[in-house]
Image 1 (cartoon, rainbow, N blue to C red):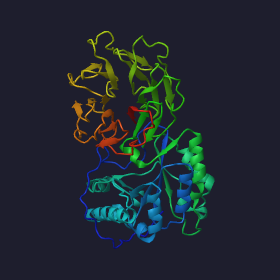
Image 2 (tube, rainbow, N blue to C red):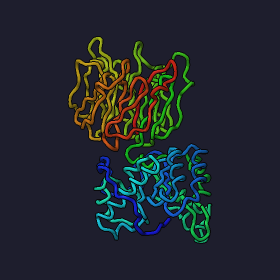
Image 3 (cartoon, helix red, strand yellow):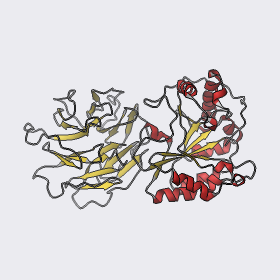
Image 4 (spheres, rainbow, N blue to C red):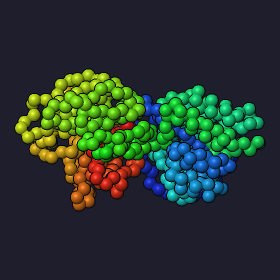
Length: 474
């Protein structure tokens, strides 16, 4: 929805510019690059706030996330509504100060529009819109993208414009809004809607259509993410009772309170093809959520062996690791294993898939790493280890219980060494496929992000009698 293309008297931002997150510069993003059945609902706010209360109520009713792109003039003119958006826990983005055509501005004016809006939005709501920016009117070119990137922001466009802003006087209806969203539906669809009313007929079609939009998308198996999904769809934490706790990533179900007596959930793996995940159980069983089931080891575990790890592969299959070093493949190629080759007293404790080759690495309790159709870059033999993760760059990360992250063929961004509270250990590591960063999961349910967005954790909320047994990133 257009706002007056004039400059507001908001002081220029003085904060130090942050760099664009890795891998996101150079383009105006019009879709979240994923195979997961997720949609990013986005609402631009500039001219008025007539639909805000209704939109927030609908999102709360359906437990849906969305992104609100605010102008500096909006937060000045409608401070209560701007604060309500942030208080509702919705994601906020930057939409300039006064909604001008960026292709007609100087570089200095572009920078001022972006950074002054950031300052105004943060001051008014307490929420920093960085790093997300939306071009007013959707007008941009390669140069304006470059200048916005230099200011530290990532332009986010849309897959479909509902045209709800045209109002009933423009020939748009609630069914038309819903039809446009569904007509362009695809994994990662970004939907452009507006917070305000049409200035002529005062209709709020996007707000009015939102319940039907959400219901119809959910009926098709879709869930909702914010544009933070461009930095990676987040992570899941698995607890021993089969509970899956999602942070920034869609949730499709869990095994909580459904496991047979004596059976625990021991591993979780994400499906890069669908955005779903698999849970591996101590009896060798595998349960699928939003991901295809290919088989399991239920009733086939060798005597004295346990399931110690799982990994999803890019072709939609998964690998199950047993403590004797055996690798059992389901819907994906097999390249070998350590079965029958482990030294006395050594077990296989983790497996990570290589997204580049389709191969995998096995992590052993003595810190050793063996590669199968995946490049070997080193190991931690002689040290206690708790996790391994493959990265998009083709290398791997090994985690130690003190929170140390040891990199092999991939960059390191920091560790938790010396930072863990007494009695807390680092138990799992997950790599962010978008940023190249990673998350460390701790025994108390806490999560620390390194060059990867933090979405929340289970710190202080691990169910009594349960433990954290795995983590997987989307």
